[in-house]
Amino acid sequence: MSRLTSEPAASIRSMGELLATAMGMEKESADRYADLAGRMRAAGRRELADVFDRLVLEETGHIDMVVSWSRQIIDKPPEILRPEAAPQGIFDEEGIGLVSPELVDAYRSLAIAVRNEERAFAFWSYVAAHGASPEIREAAEQMAREELEHAKTLRSERRKAFFKDRRSASAIQEPYDLSSLEMEVCTRLEEYAGMNESAEIKNRYRDLALEAHKLSLDLESDPLHPPSPVGPPPRSLDALCEWLADHYIDAGEHLPSQAARDRAQALATIAVKRLAIVHDLVQR
Image (cartoon, rainbow, N blue to C red):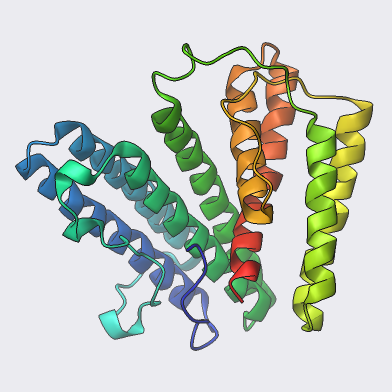
């Protein structure tokens, strides 16, 4: 699950509080991944320890970014939040610490990290919508964008883990019609909007549907020809959105021209953001 377990209890009311919150979230993630790395290393699963070590490095980089940003904005490092003041339900190791290391793999580990970044994106999106000042809302939007980029990077790593040793063995497939798939997403989003009684959620589905419709028209007039993926696209809305996000990420890494890769990466950013929103909406 990639949604918040509950809405943040109170609006963030100062930049100092926002930066302290960001620091606390990143530090918790780094500490928890470090614990998991140690557990995997103790169990002799060096390859998984390396995965969690990479996640620790990712989170350490995020911490450094928050500290640097804090020095620029408030001329000092962010404060450390008391545990009871930290946001709840953002980081979730999904019980992986209780599972035998023999049953854990790189794909599952990275999938958990992806969902954590999506929850962080949902948190900062909420703060951006309810911030006490324009400065806080703008900063929260920036944090949401950062989490989205983190999720995109981890999705790429997760995809590599899943398809490791499979690409060469795959049968050659014709590229899928991405325009038609985006139009299918549009149709499904409109259906979800029609079934929902909440005006706010209905409008969010319709905004996403309009975006998918525009993407479909763009891809119809100027098709993107990424490498063929392994496996056909699924039909459920959230799974199809996830398939497209992974497909665009893969295209952004493997298309032959820089212009095509840049275009695919832009599509990936849109698709990852859409997926995070859909994951949140379908659970409501």
